[in-house]
Length: 185
Image 1 (cartoon, rainbow, N blue to C red):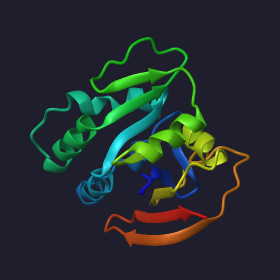
Image 2: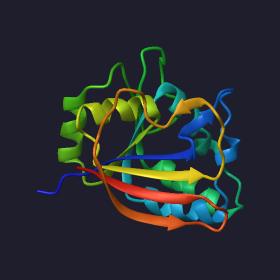
Image 3: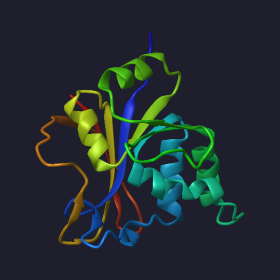
């Protein structure tokens, strides 16, 4: 029996932040080359697991209808096709189709999803990813490091998490960003 992978993907500054002290992450915006690469990484995902804040950022893709650039339209189609589970104690109703709300992250429920899913699962946001790492659920981590030091903000991983990783792949992009793919060991 094949078990689906749980994958955490993030764009981070070289000093390890997904946004800066003001909450900005425009310095990490992917160009066409990086976006096309991310699209291929995301294409096999069947379900996205989000916290409320990450969901509120990502739901942009539900209404993105611009025909150009094609790599953005392609990502919107990938995102819309996947199921979404949002872990939130405050969000009453989802604002996008194929979305359910769960009040709390249950490691056993995620483990069961991995065992029953025909497609990989993606987890978005450092807090939720930290909970999955702490529960031993994470299979793969994909980081795209941006060539910028922002000096503070939200870390790509929460404090207190310790996990051994094995480098499986890397790629350098023409804009100076670097992709690193790790498996948990």
